[in-house]
Image (cartoon, rainbow, N blue to C red):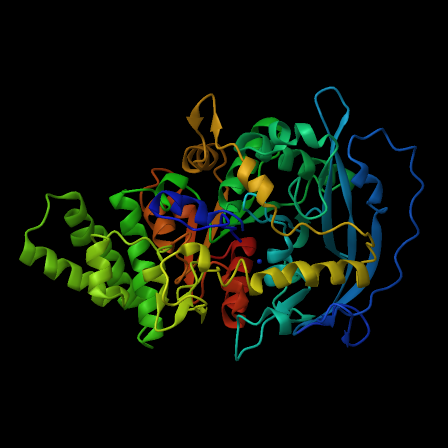
Length: 522
């Protein structure tokens, strides 16, 4: 998932909107209410006794002392095909700098199916994006053995979200390791003052994740297992950078990469006055309008895509239109997006989805993360975006943090007074997208090289039709223009927004389609 800056101002800030941000009983007893206001996860077997450790090395971060010992618990997942026993480990990995001194404690939760042949059993490493988002979104939203369900009658109601068994858990076809980036979740830098330089940048972030993955593989003797990465939002770029670091720094080639609502090329998302970025956004605006009118079909969306990259793009890039031609053009775009023609004309058909008069209609305030999802607009008469809270980031999406805190303590036995940092805006603000003065927040150059040097690498990309932060058209356009490995990349678009998995049907379809990647199906 993707955090927004505190205020959503005009078009130059639009790029920031893509940032922060995958039927069984988890254990043996039934769900019960807990003190967090959510249904508690199923009780787990008692945590294993802490393993004695050497005297801790000196740290500049006093909070690290609050991290408990690793906790190991045993569970059973009930699936349509039967029961699957698994072992869960909630703990930390110690990253070290070039001199061997500890640099960070990285929190992770691993789920390993019992009684499997590890040489053949895939293992997947999950992370969210942001930068600055913890992995609770994918963990409790898409792939883990428990899932946070929102009320069907009001999916924006985070206060009444409930944890329950996830019938679509990916554990049926892969072991899973969810890793929080340094500065998010329970992952802490040893020297906070050095964290921005050590961890909070495109390249060093990929290297840190690659190092954490290597450590887990070695500690668990899983070097022979097929290995996958799963990233959401900025996790798209993160997955590519991590894959490249695994290949070039750790000598670890991958079997596959899964990207969910990914940011792959930052310069194509929300750029100021970029006709190509506007063309990428238009089909998502059109899909949201089609859904609101109950007219959504794949053909209608494809027609919108072809219009966006044909007449729409050529018109934006061409000479200024005369009055009559402009009126016709703005009317066409208004009809496609459901926006008033006056708003389209004011924006010269280059729609800024953050603008208040774009988001606010008929007293409802629509989300950037799902153009079909809205809340009551607290300031329907205003134009100040500071008065326009984002329904996902400021609303129901925050329920993942509260739910995860209860789950990891009650079911997984990892008990700490530390706050789980679901969205760390300080990390987001400090993030370095450059190296040597050059913008390096691009994924395609490294992905092209990975596809070339690893002829068995396969990529699956999942997008939501109604996501206005990381539009599906960006993924489609980039794939269409790949010179190598295009036949090993699959794109699937689902009803939903940035967090498409919050819709049960889309979550089930996503799990089904990803499993095909792991089994080698087309």
